[in-house]
Structures are given as C-alpha cells and as structure tokens.
Length: 381
Image (cartoon, rainbow, N blue to C red):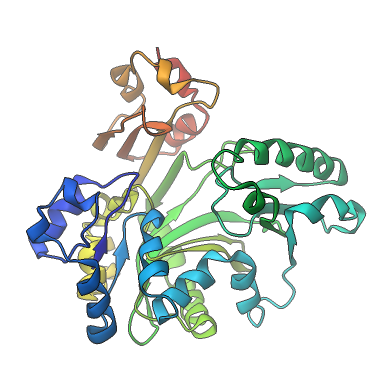
C-alpha cells in the first residue's frame, strides 16, 4: 500500500505504481494522479494491513498521520513512533551504545541547564522533528549560550504554525557529536527482521557549520567498503528495536572505530523521491524491490560499473529571498555547473524552498565540491 503525500511525487514513482499495479491509498494527492476507481479506500487499507499483513510505504513523512489515526497501537504504529522519538530511539539502542551521551530536555528547561556540565561538542535538535528549523552543532559554553538565544528566536517563528502550548513544551535532545563521515542509506527489514540495503549515500558538507542536504553521492567504492558493515549494524538494530516489514531511510556516521546511527526516518526512503538515485546509479527500482521483497545482487551490479560518482543535488532558494517576488530562475546558467546530468526535475519554487533536483554522474569530486559551496541566489531574478 503506497501513501502519496506532498511535497513531491516523482514521475518515476507514478510509472512504477502503474507498471506493477501497486495499491495506492485514496487521498487528495493520490487523486492528482489516479482516478477514484483506481485507489484504495481508507477502510480497505486498514483491513488489508490487519488481515493480510499488507506492506506500507510512504513517499513523504507527511503521510504517516494516516497510520497514527487509523492503525493506532498496531505494530506499524509502534515502529513509526519509536523511530520519530529520538530519545526513545537512543534509549532502545543503549545496549549497543552504552557510553553514548544523550539527554532529553523540554524547551522551558533549556535555560536552566548548567552549560559547564555539557560534554562538548554536542548537537541540539528537536526530539520529534515537527520543528523543521534543523539542528544546532555546539562546540563550547559560549556557543551554547548564543544557540539558546537563537533557538528562542526560531521558536517564535513557529508560533503562528503550531499552538503556543505545543511549542513551549516541545522536547529537545542534546547528544554527543559523532565524529566521522556522514552517510545515509535506504533499506528495508523483511518479515524476519533481516535488512536489505538498496542504496548507500555519502553526505558531504561545505564546512563545519553546514547542516544542509545540498548533495549526497554514491559510488562503487562506497558500496564495496560499507555494505557489509552497515548491514551488520542494521541487523543488530532490528533485534534491539524489533523492527520487521519496515522500509526506512537511516542517517549515520562512520569512522575507523565506530558506526553510530544518527536517526531513522520511518516508512520511507530518501525524501523528495531522491531515492530514485538508486535507479540512475545501479538500475535498482527501490519501490519494486521493497514490495517484491527482492535483494540486489551487489556483486553482479558492481562488476559492471566504473569508479564514477553518482549524485543528486538540491538547488535551494536562499532564506533571505522572498519566493513570492521571484520573477525567473535561470536554469540554463545553473545547469552549466553539471556536466553529465542524468535527470533534471524542476520544482515549483512558489510552493517549495527549492527550484530543482538534479541526478548526475561525475568522474571526480570537483563538481560536487563546487555545488556544495555554490551561491544559488545568483540564478534567481
């Protein structure tokens, strides 16, 4: 059962649904692509899960409210809630990471914390990700004090979106900053809790303050180096969390000594349908693989590949630009930076904070490094 929701549904996903005749939940977004007769009612979807162990997949976490409202206290509901609650997720993994520091604090109590007692460097972020202003890396007492002031300013921006009592009692998590390279992967746990990895991405940053999602890339060498290590971690996670029949996007950091999960995004793969990179990179249709419960033959796939990097890049609109005043985007000028685009997806910038997603291939890291630091404002009139 596929749950379609905003902000973005790729043509590739729609084509895959039609080709395989996958079931799609009837909702407003789904009706933009399918007739009512082609869709599955809410009642039928609930019955399919309860009586037939129907597999569920969402293109966006905006869709998981359906699970909370209609499948409350089911196994699927519990897995999603455990994934979304970062403190509960950390608590569940204490047996795997007994020395890992994390602390759950409500917003009103942050000011009362003694900054001398914090084991810097740390990350401060919302415990449940409904406050989308992001994460705050903090390396010292001085940065902590500045961050708390900035957080209060950011909270005020959300008072018109969320009820004040919800914002004021929001929980945050303080956790140790994990050293190493950042990665992400798309995978699923099968009915036995065994993990199948469908793609692995490396997530580079422009500098130490960058927390953006501008670029992710994959390569033959990345898969060869990390697949088996990450699969062992996932199988350990499945045992600790008791996760089965579950698709997910996992962010993690890896160094020579440790591999530590950052967070798990439930019921979906990489957002904005960027998971489609697996098809452009390896010929893997992740939606078919999950619903058909098939496992990529990585040895065979990689034997036919060179050492090029496959990547996606998001062309974001700088926060200081009022999207309602944009007259034109110079896509042609922007795309001159990308020598070998595999697919270009223009995004409606009047409704979203980005204007393009591009999948591409490059033999070196130079193109990727340039895109990480590129000022996308210069393409906007």
